[in-house]
Image (cartoon, rainbow, N blue to C red):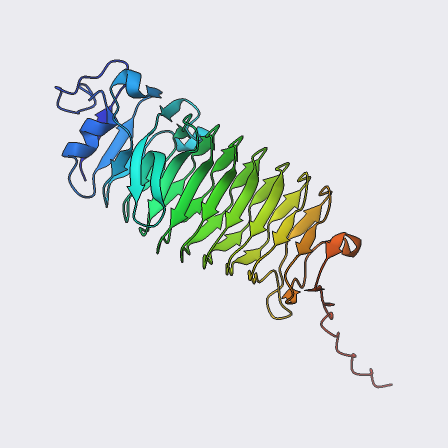
Amino acid sequence: MATLYVNSATGSDAAAGSQSAPLKTIARAIGIAPYGAIVQLASGTYSAASGEQFPLDIPSGIKIIGNESNKGSSIIIQGSGKFVSPSAAGQNVTILLGTDAELRGVTVINPEIRGTAVWIESTSPTVANCTLTKSKREGIFATGTANPAILDNIFLENSAAGVIMAGSAKGVLRRNTFQNTGFGISLQAQSAPLIVENQILQNRSGIVLAGDSQPTIRKNRIERNVEDGLTVVGKAMPDVGTAQDLGGNVFVNNGEFDLQNATGVKIFAVGNQINSSLVKGLVELGSVTPTPTPTPAPTPT
């Protein structure tokens, strides 16, 4: 598997891209990378000032790798460029991801008004162990028939949301932290991801569901969000736990409601840690019946 090395401080786009002769820009690396290649980034800032051209369009099968062990804290990709989305018109985007592309161990910032750090349009990439922070809109926007794996990332201080999903996007959001952002997760249209094992803390609202979205929500900690932990509006219909498949979510100290269902249809939220006095609307919290213990056979005398 080919590996191209990039160093924004010491590299040159006229170089070979080897470890001893790195390229200077990610844009040059992805322009020459064969399918399946790894683009390995050195610590530093990758921006228009260092020669990058945004949005960076990561082709199918290419892996952009920084430092996964520290969530990319020393490898910053910062910038914005115009992207015309087939489903959502003109956008300001830092990175576009193709199917089977991977973005790992980098920090991504879009400082532009209504800026999106990572845009996923009808593709199936992986974003893992990254920090998506201080973007003027959201960290990740997934739409169309997107089916991403969004794993082990930190979403911090993004103005609108950590992740927004629209269209018929699916995929999985697993083990991420959403903190001090607008909405932690916002789902629209027919989006239906699996939301599992995330920490959703101190946002304006934790999870906001609208449109006809139908996510499955399991084993998340939803805590100290200023307004609601989980808000359901429109025709959204989440699965927050059933008697056969318990939710396992923990709702703690959210400002207004732990769970607010503003639709006219009952939703199921069985098997969660939740304060029933902080639940509003038609919600079936259920009661979990413990498995009966068999009566021991009498010992013969």
